[in-house]
Image (cartoon, rainbow, N blue to C red; front, side, top):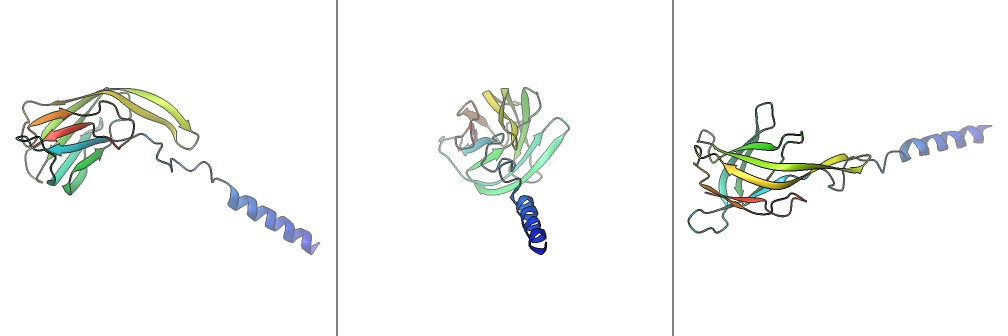
Length: 160
């Protein structure tokens, strides 16, 4: 009887610790990809490093500050995951400086990935538009890849 209880206890603990390994949430990067933005100089069009960059995004309930990054060549930014056809993004190079507003228009598709990940959004027909009233510090936009498949390729370039 003593061995029977021990066997049942071992079976119980092995079942307890073996559950849940396959349904971990998006461990392999299958979630909704973010948009990649790189930077170039306005005069020459060559890629450049930005000393400091502050980014804010309006996800539908007001601006959310994504924080400051220093000495960067590119930045990935999450877009809205609701059914809105655009996301407003604000860029500035100093904490109290002027902001440039960019509206990124797109179409979305939902794709089922797995039980753990659920559904991910894909973005197509990206069209960034710089608000003409806010052309400092961003002076212009250059298009890149116009869909978001993963976070490897640049979707558009900001010209400073």
